[in-house]
Amino acid sequence: MIKKDLKNNQGFALVLSIILLLAMSLVGGALIVISSGDHKANNASADYQQTFYVAESGLLEGEKYVINTYKGPYNTSSNTRANGEHLNLFPVSDESTVGNLVTTKANNPVTGERLPDISACFESFVDIEKSKFRFAILKKNDPSKDPDIPVKYKKKFYDHIDGDKILDKSGVSGDDKTREKRLLENYYFVYFVTRAEDKVRYVVTGNSVSQSSGSLGAGSAKLGYEYTVHACGFNEEDGGLIVPLISTIILPED
Image 1 (cartoon, rainbow, N blue to C red):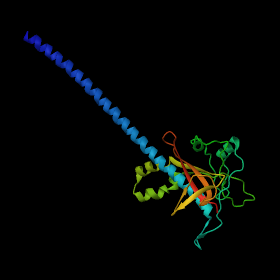
Image 2 (image 1 turned 90 degrees about the vertical axis):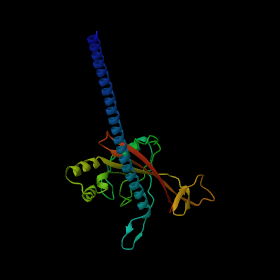
Image 3 (image 1 turned 135 degrees about the horizontal axis):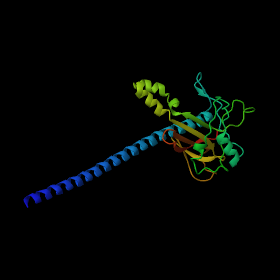
Image 4 (image 1 turned 90 degrees about the horizontal axis):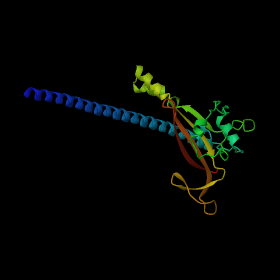
């Protein structure tokens, strides 16, 4: 009788051990899955944040182009600017014309750079109406001869920040440097610019410029043109991640 009970206890202990082993395996597996999911989420968040910073770089470059055109070329001898101007708009706006301007790859008449197809970025802004959208026109060397070219630009982020110099100064070398360079080369930004056709009213406070609401008329502090810079950051490695951003600036009419 005692031997029989002992065998029963041994059998029960074996079954209990197997059950506990299975339970621990399930818990361990679940922890691995959760940890893996957290790791992927963290990587996705980091990729998005980096792409966001790249998009911000595109915004800044677009704003710089608008402002530098308005202020005019800088004369290093006299430390002055002259012959500034506002960017003009394409006279026609319809879906076919805008679609062609989005994809055209004509050369920049000033720099000679090849203009990009910005379809992926343009289509990221779902609120743009092609039938009403009007591109700003690139500054020309010879207004009487140069064709109208839209203000749009694309650049590798690695080249924009002078990646080779940065990596050299960072002390990274060997395989680590190669890996960092490969990762950074996946990022690039695109920007394009439009301008409101009608002048807007704005109020100057200190060194900042802020737009006030209301129609034009008596009592307006100043009149100016409102520019909108659209920019996108891209990460080619992460399934074509795109982060679109918009910036609005107002510059005096003269």
